[in-house]
Image (cartoon, rainbow, N blue to C red; front, side, top):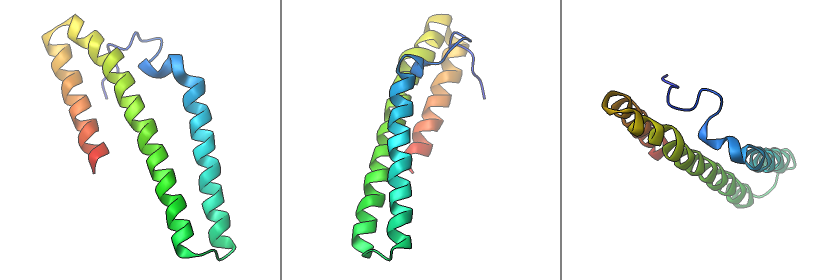
Length: 101
């Protein structure tokens, strides 16, 4: 994986790192809640509702990370030039493909 063009000291998400960590901790709590629901034999639809909420929350984190990556790493690669930009565009295109599955 090519990590150039990201200032080598930090990545695009660094300014929001604490916000990302807080969101992920909330999601982790939701997942533990789903485990508890299954352990307590809760109703299927209620569990599925919570699974959907976790899935949406993770997708939101992923979309924000993708946006941060484009605004930081891809932008820096474009400034640097053609070859670096091509590598980052391919990288972000592959990430979008994986994310869209």
